[in-house]
Length: 129
Image 1 (cartoon, rainbow, N blue to C red):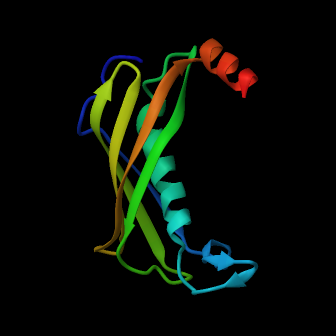
Image 2: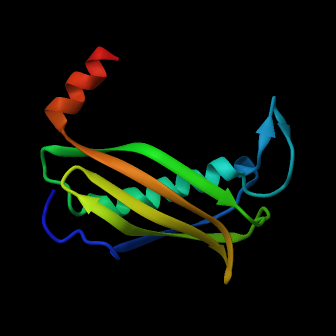
């Protein structure tokens, strides 16, 4: 990784909740709010954005962990903002704390971890899969 990625580095993403983001099981929508898995998707995206500027041309990041405590609803049509903050940084791993807000209200908190591999190593790993 390039120098400069330190704890405290932040990125954020925002999105508007659409009907496709609602929790559905066996084709039946359960609630007209943003699903937990959709929030996790945006937590992973925000964490990746923290990493992107610091990857060398021959490196790639791979998600290895995601956790989320979903504490409040975001109804269809509402705006959600997810902030990822680097907490632990090493040569081959990035951990981010992630928080999701609807307005000023925190609706979820979690963590993402990405491993950093040389692209050639990652290609070998994926070929074996």
